[in-house]
Length: 438
Ligand code: SAH
Ligand code: SF4
Image (cartoon, rainbow, N blue to C red; front, side):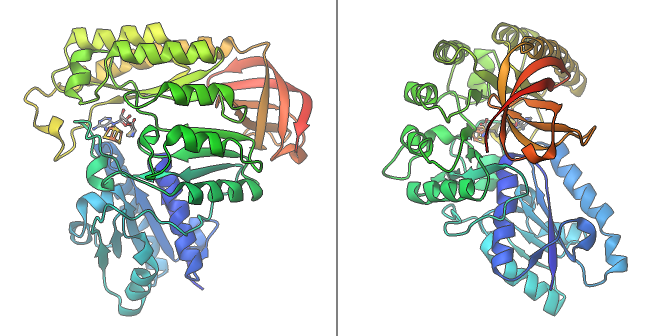
């Protein structure tokens, strides 16, 4: 029996897609390997959102290719966004690569793998069809307690810096009934914390139901305990969504809301379709409705034509909002996107300096935010023993922070209330006060 191993790079959509591909391959009779060493089919699920991400995965393929010397029947495949962007040219560029399969062609993977094995040929499939939703495939999820459920694929927003709409095609929503069924099954399989996924979940629309309606129904599914969703676009998040979040006990007190920039001038050039005032208005509304909500964000520096003043506006807005955490990026030009042709690209040195300033600011804010948690009682969904000690457990709070505390392995997969007694780095430390439920 041929065993496959999938190494995933990039966002949660890619994690979910790898689980989907694991579902497709398992249904076709292939077996999932626990480690890369056991596999004779190694698949890299790739990210191309920034050049660095693309270089990393391609570099890794080259370094894993030496495994072929020990196992001449081994196949190496590339799927995901780099596969979609670069297509068959990669087969010429990287000789150890046997197959390249784009984001809409995963149903073909078993056939392609079998052909590669039988005929020793190199194959690719990268036709984008803009409709594939991978209905009727149940993903083989990674071990753990958290499940990702894809509710939509693709993106129509064309933010001027972003490659995603080009490699993942047009936005399409999955049927609500299918989504609800998948959530229920995930809960029954022991994944009590479910995250709904899409590039822009707030514009979910399956022709009948919109996002707040889906959210409300999903929050009533009995087999799960916690519900989250990602990613929200500030132009589309509605008051109704915030109301549902505040009203439904299973919806967690966390929102990831990419801000990108604090300068209206840059937001306009990014084609984001909101202003910093509108962004701040959403933050106020969220905090009014849910005082304990954790808010995280994505911010980019060094977008073409970003002046020192534009950057300062981003810096000051972050300082004012005080996110629990921020993913900070320096702009990376992506071929074919609108921003790539903008005249004034910012020098690398300036991009790095601005990035460093934002990182320092956010580290300080995150440190303070975590210190503020000391003394609170929070619920932890226990995932595994901690990396440092098997007498310590690690899990996530409802507001998506990692917490560790002394405890027995028997609590893995259960919910425990702890009191926070310390915080270091991005980790809360606590002591168990009681066991809430299994
Ligand atoms: N759909 C999501 C996120 C997609 S990509 C959204 O709209 O928020 C994740 C993050 O990568 C983005 O929020 C953005 O901050 C960053 N990103 C996207 N393209 C980039 C580029 N060309 N250079 C640097 N960062 C980029
Ligand atoms: Fe990219 Fe914008 Fe779509 Fe997000 S919303 S995936 S940033 S184009």
